[in-house]
Image 1 (cartoon, one colour):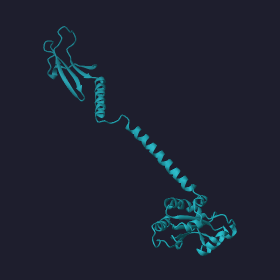
Image 2 (cartoon, rainbow, N blue to C red; image 1 turned 90 degrees about the horizontal axis):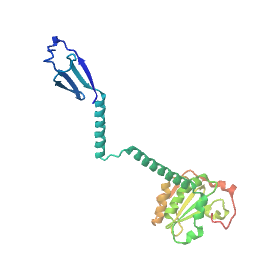
Image 3 (tube, rainbow, N blue to C red; image 1 turned 180 degrees about the vertical axis):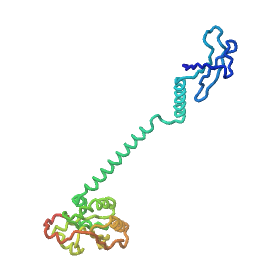
Length: 258
């Protein structure tokens, strides 16, 4: 252990007998911050040095050693408690992985929603005549390719169709097709999208027109699937496209059910 030694010449006025016979050296050694320990040693008779009182103080090496001990104790206590050496890095990696997965799921879900088009609905729809003859209730949507609201509602309609397709028929009739002139008059279509809800016998229970909360469609379709006598939203109108615009876009395709 390295020590700093301070030699203090103490005059006799302080009550010390400086004679060689009675003289003793005083050593003060640091045993642990901030306490000190005083040690008196017998004088060396063979020494010719002037009789002095000596103050011995440990330098920074003992302090550094104590710090090393404290550090090792802290490490051992942390290990005994079972804490990992670098918990933050592991947690951050897991959080980052979960965030990436959630973002990808949201991205894929969004792309699937916006990827549904009116053509997709038309492709999965039943022909009108078949729907009226299979004994199931039916939802008939009158639409047009140029109808902005129709395109916006396509993802919601598709989800509802996928959920109830085993119990309810879904039919798509394009108002631009002159084949459906009679049905347009029969169901009184003035705006699109126009959803007509038919019971098992093909009788209309009500209709919903335009942009409305998705729940309107869900509740009406659910009522049809359950075979209820009426639907909760028998007549509801939201923002729609005028069916009068169809005169400009008319097509004649008797083979098409869309």
